[in-house]
Length: 448
Ligand code: EPZ
Image 1 (cartoon, rainbow, N blue to C red):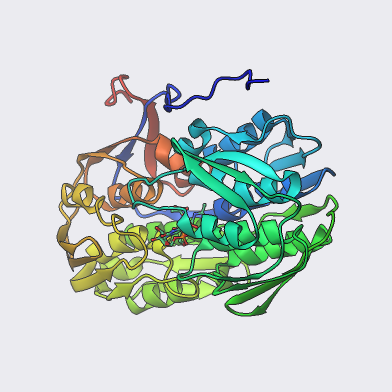
Image 2 (cartoon, rainbow, N blue to C red):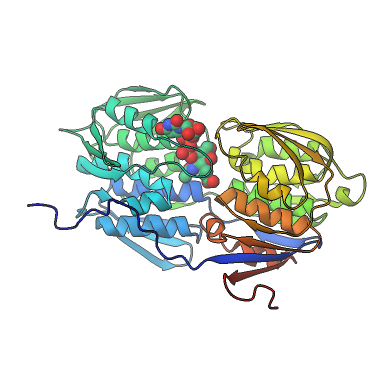
């Protein structure tokens, strides 16, 4: 019978209430802030729950838009997803009605592509939209598709959708990635847990969120381990069981708040912070002259050097973990505007991740963009308030940091980008003494 439900071939965006942030800069932050669960762990854990029909329970899940989109995408597949209390999700992927992940989900959130591996491994077929690129780069999914084919999947691409089947069962094999891919590693790892035989993944990405996922899969009864820093090995099982897991802390959110304390010349304390996942970043920040002291799960930030000798220029280069995370490059670039001298920024992962710096320049930052991967930031610049537009999640959070450091009022349009990946970011900044308001577009933004 023809599929009763018409495909939505072109994406019709949900009407988002356009929101903005209005920030009054110039005040030093103080107090403490608790870091939430990691977006880039939570989304993959929810996808991994599809590998079993038994109930899975996740705690410390961040209350962010991307998690809500993933939960809704799972519900539309017929998966039971309960949200019994804040930061808790329960998932039971019994028999799934549809195996169709629509364009809407992919257009909102690239991580919807994480459903390819688990749905293919569990049910043997799935139609899933190509998530496409976004403001930070083209972001193809060829590495995911090639890896699934290596496991024996048959995948055809038509009109923006991948039609994937696994005749019989996926078969374990050696998956060699031509370059490191975080979600490519995760997608094929999830699929391999139910494949027939042994799978070796190399080079496997080393991001800490992947080890969070491995820990959960092991609780489900999967036979998976990281045998070398860049190698993951899996012995497939017939079935996995339900399990419970606490999402690890978000290292990118933590890095964002470290910069907030520094660029406002404040002193703040981060709690529930994953210090041991921030090595390269904290080293860079300390080279710039920011005071940092860590315990296992707290980070004390002392940005008072800003008022004295100021910060020191530092050259930064992003890389795969354990290198400096590309997601922490935009916040770090804001810090470099407050350092005396020229700092080189080399963004090696995404080809369009420096575009947002045009907005930073409108706030008075002195930035020369050399090409799509390189820029030079010359400080120390006196940032001033402006009317700016957010293009992507991490750029959005970074514009808030710049607004906090600037003199005067900054209006930041496109706040919904930030709510995708940061839980209650305005509330957390208010708790640190920031003057920030979240307003709907169209309201008189100057109203008190
Ligand atoms: C994950 O994206 C993160 N997203 C990104 O965080 C993060 O920036 C990125 O890893 C790198 O650390 C989630 O985990 C949901 P990749 P992912 O595959 O897995 C190219 C955020 O703000 N590539 O490691 O999609 C790709 O274009 C987001 O939280 C291919 O060419 O990144 C990029 O240049 C932004 N073909 C490079 O590899 C593919 O099939 C690394 O991408 C896949 C990737």
